[in-house]
Length: 144
Image (cartoon, rainbow, N blue to C red; front, top):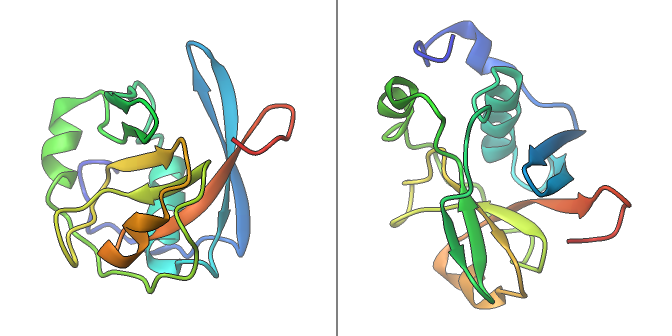
């Protein structure tokens, strides 16, 4: 499935709201995804989660007081298949608040699989087209 991005599997729409638990070596957190914020990006994330795309993924870029980045799968062959599969942009409906997750990009229509979590308020990124898709919470339910 992961090596065939044209398969019908990838066309399933995400539920209106769903949660995905992310487990790390330092504990876990939950991503609450809301399709009404950004349906295109949320559908992709939903299907990547369903396909176990992020298993063996790592946080590979940490910029203190800014972001934590992840989204490259552990399998290099899977990365090769997905790294250039850009999707259309969703309109910006939220702001890059602390604990919000967005796709990385290099310009319009270039979002693929890499994501970042804002560790602080990053509203300055909104006008640049970095679209917040979801929020994450710690296991105890507090925003993070």
